[in-house]
Image (cartoon, rainbow, N blue to C red; front, side):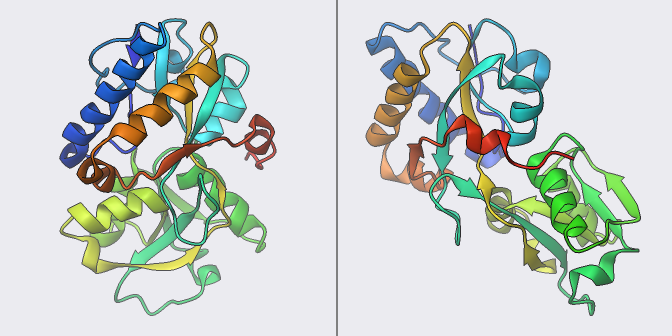
Length: 245
């Protein structure tokens, strides 16, 4: 049995994530679903998410619609109450150094764009769709492997601009010492947030109820740490219609 919560796994939030999972584990048990007592560290990637032993995880919208939508079952979507987004939706922020004089996105066409991975909705796909709609794409790019690394690359002058999802940006502002050196230039259009998924052999409605139960029972301090409000239902079709690069 496999379970993970890898998407916002800041070290400072490990205890909160484990408490959240413990609540889900108990709620699943009350519904007759067996699950591991602990989370798999670094439990992400297509090979992990597609395993038949998967009980619960959170993936990114791009790999979900490109590779996983017919291999796993969509449980629901976490609502992190992102500003100017409908429940369960999020956006990406183009972040630049605070002292930058360039204040229009098009001014960065020849700058270095840092991105976490080409398989990321928030770090790559949303940015590409947003800029191509404005008739350009960054001529210089740098893959960093993570949102935190992308933001830090901009802060340290190793890149000029990056697209950071709104929830990750929230964590960066809260936990990272370099955050005051950055500012938001522009936001992308909202898209469905990172979906919770389960294996093909489990009933997603039952898992949804267990997650909702766990959230309802979670203590306010842990909910505040995770900035988690609730789980919502966003139809599969809403994920599949998002443009894919």
